Image (cartoon, rainbow, N blue to C red):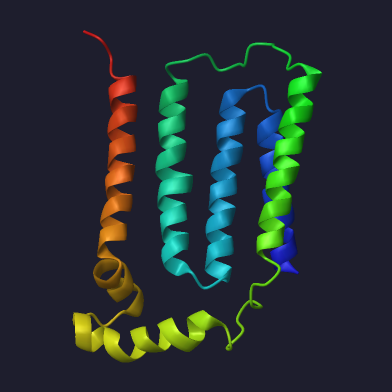
Length: 173
């Protein structure tokens, strides 16, 4: 039941953020969305992803958006989108949703012990990670050793984005 409540809250936050004309309110709604996503990730037992979502999504991103807002106007200028564009956007969203839903049809059920990830990858990490990496925690072993280049790449992207925001927000002397 709580999962449906979380999903409903996510949908409400997303729709409300889209409709907001006050940009600070939209930022606060998106920060709330990220925080609830961290709760969802925790409920899915993906604590490492939840931690990242909470710190980056709800924390740093919200702060950077508020800092950016301090350099712009708080209210959105009144402009209308032509009906043709709205229809095109709607069709693109519906097609993307249909493709994503189609892609989930043959996925195994959540927590299914017969899923490929539980048959091949997980047992290998459980049995061999300490011996191959010397790290006691499985998640740390996977992120730091087995997927070290992925983690390094993600860190470089976040660092680069942060540097770009700092360069854009700096004051001219």
